[in-house]
Length: 163
Image (cartoon, rainbow, N blue to C red; front, side, top):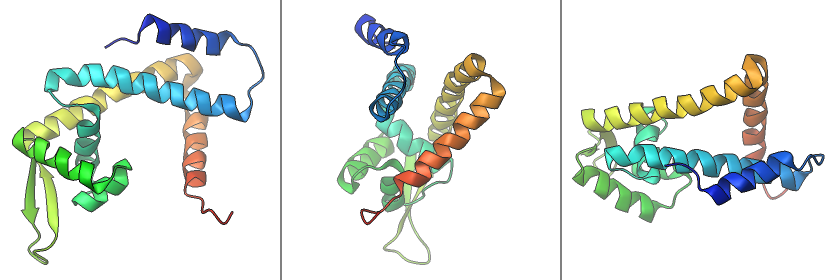
């Protein structure tokens, strides 16, 4: 799925503005990059018959960031009701299995099927192509600096309302 002509024109206007960056511009750039990456990834995922949200769930489980529905909810910043519905769909598609923990039957652990692992892996490989584009545009050193800056921004996002 390519971005629309209007979306492409917007990105060009942002790039051609030539104005010094202010805080609002930084947020706009982050949102725009996310939107473009999400739209392109969504188009790529159609061949696997999963949507972007479902792929994020598969990816969280695949990367072992989360193995329970509650942890998937936290890892994807998605409410638990939505996660439950998406897990039902993923289970119906044969991509995820739910298993009760042997230590505590109240805990449900999630495991990808081989098909779910394939889709998660394929989506990650596609994402890496998008990052490769960034690396080609700004170089290895700046990509590493960008990565470190994003890590710093992520740390900042964990702020409390007291600060």
